Length: 309
Image (cartoon, rainbow, N blue to C red; front, side, top):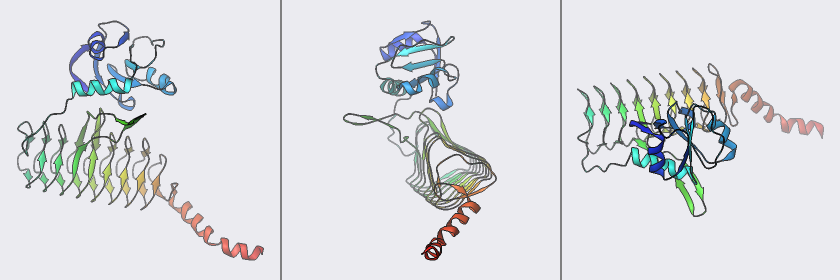
């Protein structure tokens, strides 16, 4: 997430009421999670296990809960609670905007697009040409939708990321300030839920088709011309490359990559990254042929035990 204008390190430190290490005029351009940071971004880290990863990332400003040696060309913001202060920045630069109409006056809707009754189009939403939005669809603020997109009834684009920090008195939510981006010629079935990124974009690539009741987690990137069948649950920060087919009731863990033209058979648990161009099945996931051989061998166990007796 980029800020509307460039801020100084001093300005950000004053906003958070925290110490800093570095030139007070050091430029701050935005904030992001570690997997999408760029120079000029703030990244937060609050556990020693991840200090080195954050300090050596592309981010040039690190919001951290301990004074450490500052890498050359970077700056530090020293906070007693980086998680809380990252939320403070999100609320400041991307505050929640109340809406009291079904279609916001700030929404941009392209020529030929049809919106059925009882749908909600939020603030600063952009919808391209010749789209069809069926009834009871909710499109949250800042969502971007391309041309020739069809979205069926009851689908929700832009809900918050499922991202929490455990506290002694419960769970503290990491506030989402990212977007959902739907490219041209995408089809989205009924009752789908696509969460926005925490600071970046959740993206559905051109020509991809989602069946009914598909969930896509925050910051996930789905490539072009993919097919995803009903009741699939895709976790956050997943990369699904082009022309992947995922059949029904598949679930994935977060932070993995499914290679181009892979086929994931129904009810598979994608527990790790997999190469493209192959078919996979089972939990834990394996290539389909190998998994089917294993299942066939399991059926032989009673016969083998009888022979041993």
